[in-house]
Image (cartoon, rainbow over all chains, first blue to last red):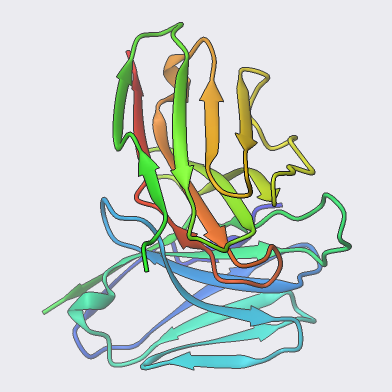
Length: 114
Length: 114
């Protein structure tokens, strides 16, 4: 089941904040966040494991609400370099069998203008 | 160290021909993944390997697609009798282990079927 990301696109001025949401209809083990710039490979931002943790990476942080099966990515004081498409990927609880599958959302296009 | 590499970077082929796409993961990474990304779309999970084993092949789009991995390292994705709808960027990623780990993506192979 593909997670749903919102918004689909957002335009910011440098220095503004943004929140990108990711929700799933199924129980989750972890949520991954990646950023992809045009014509490049996706680059890992962070993983949040089951347990409702919050993580940070410079001015980019994320939360994972396991109960609500939702994750949010917070970008504060955005920089031009933050522009790109942000993908969340979700995987279900893994039993060691064949059910491992990281399913990505359709992405959120973030544009940061000067 | 070296990242994930893929070859060729670009492949143009005629409808009906077979193609082989190669992925060299990061040394020591036991897990390897194949994704497909169509223009402006998200990442579609195709298959993963734990060592040389692919426990679940149901993500492959059709029986024209096959993948193998040898020596716990290099992987090949083969598409037989290519169709125009196979045109996409094929991305390979690797991680230390399957679950809850950062995936490192290669630059991708852009496949165009004429």
